[in-house]
Amino acid sequence: MANSMTHNAGRSISGSTSGLMIFYRTNFNMPVPALVGSWSLGSASTSWDLTGFAPGLEICAGAVYLNLEGPIEGNVTITLGWYNPAGAAVVGPFTWTQYISLASGSSYTNWLYGAANIGCAAWEVGASGTYTLRSTMSGAATAPNKSTNITFSNVPSVATTGTAGMVYVDGNYLAMINANNFLHKSLGTDIANPSAAPGYVWVDTFNNLSFISADGHKRTMPWKIKQFASSFSNGATGEVYAGTNKAGMIWMDNEFGWTHISYIGYDGYKYLCGAGDYPY
Picture 1 (cartoon, rainbow, N blue to C red):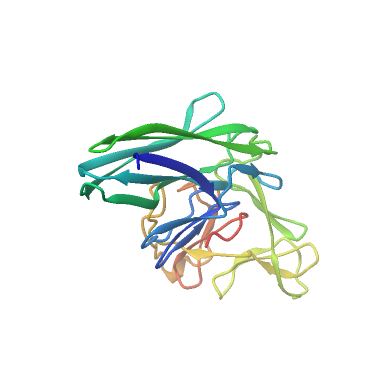
Picture 2 (picture 1 turned 135 degrees about the vertical axis):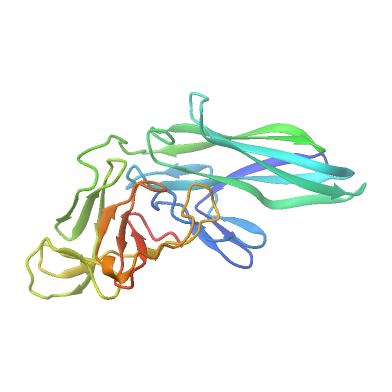
């Protein structure tokens, strides 16, 4: 068996013993759980239809897999990056180095060695077309450079709009202009009919971001997460406790992916929510 690399792109990554991160149609750079054990890629495909997407949402994670044959003794370095149709790098390339020791005749097959997520935005997937995953291998083992084409179709407009930080009720949706100036809308979960005037937005005693929709119903954002340390780079570095005296503060966060609403819950902790799908 000659040394080789293979690629694919999937909706999610999960660890064999713990951790799951869904990328497809989720807000940019939500915290990623510790993906413990052997990683696997979910719902892999080389063709992605972005109908119904908005800019500022993740699409998928590209992955590189290794197949090695001994003898190998030493550090092996792998790079992986995403490239747009013009050939420019738009994500990465990222580098991983691992010490590998294989006796003659021994083989090493890694289900998922490294991954890099890509999303819908002018600086990543900004138009329909064929993008490319590329990887290299160097060091104690080498393999031919690898390129795999991934097609994205029906990519929405990635134009910006409005004033960042605006949050308002639009029918049964909570609309927001996030910190990247993308318009997002989230359909609220219908909770009750308190006969209140539409337009109110507040944090309730269950740590939910709530609002009164146009029909006079109380609705909540479909999901929330208490911020935690992300195992991917460019993510949350840990939970934040602001204190119960700060409960109810709401702002458009300009951390991580710049696409989510942050607020201080009734319990005093920082929460994240957004218009994308639930990421876990």
